[in-house]
Image (cartoon, rainbow, N blue to C red; front, side):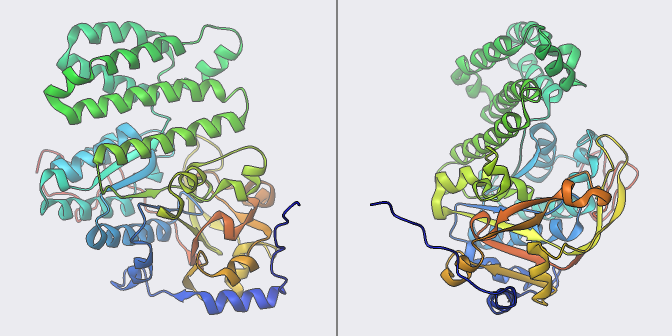
Length: 443
């Protein structure tokens, strides 16, 4: 006998709006010390994935930071893993854990989109995390790590720099292997295009270099275990990046899946490296941390880190999405073009965002994982908005909306009705409250 799944609860739109209103927790201002109280319910998880509906919204970054601070301070979370490149995030990690100057402000995140991580909101969190870590023993300090695959050239340089210090002969061999990729450090996408057109692939050389590094693991770790770990992860990024840029020209689904598989594998590596009791907060876009299997992405063959975490960790992974109706966003018109502060259009009437808007709560958290009635009512496809580093209001329906079954995509949603753009910073735009007085010369 074939078992049929129950149909979604039949409710009118008005009934659903009322159900959302009754189920929501009203939140105070993000800067209020009690803002994070509602998120205490997620403290028992091993991994809390916190999304964002755009890569350029101040309130998303600030709210995520406030939640993360609470999970770190009171509940023992030890890793912050961001949708950022490993070498750039390592600069933040060295600042917050090793008392190094904030070189990430001047030296990191130079690749488009610079504002995604080099902004005042991240600087404020990094300063807080440094202060928090000051009171802890070195082995207890909270890490800030990057999960992404884009840093081909920077990761190669990190591996070579490490080998130069510990094994110059191995460094010379690594240079020959990585030399295959040397012309493409700044434009790796061209490498992928050329391979598609029949030019030789560098995959074998990159794999050989990772194997050679791992073969010396025990010897290298005796000298400096943390430095080896950083070099190993960079070598893995080089491998993933080489595969990613080739996959770009084989289809968007394959390259997306490769990228999110790498992010998930890196997260698992971080948890294992940290040891028993390790707990992580993941910062990434909704499109990465929501369960892709319940969206048009998954229906088209894509998976993401959220889906992989849900499969691997079950209820020990919590997926929190974010949404907004209108306001501002920092974004560009096209890739590699200047950032602009753009106006976000009010949400479409047939979107999930519109339902939360009509519920009438300017800031709220709605949790449905343990609310069967609400889960069932939300178990239907509806449009959801996603703004990345590109925002094209003129083609918003085609460019930024996709179908999603909300109750399966996330476990909860943080709603912030009106939002503002992040505040980019750079070498000439450093907030003195966010870095030491002696920047950039030392502590």
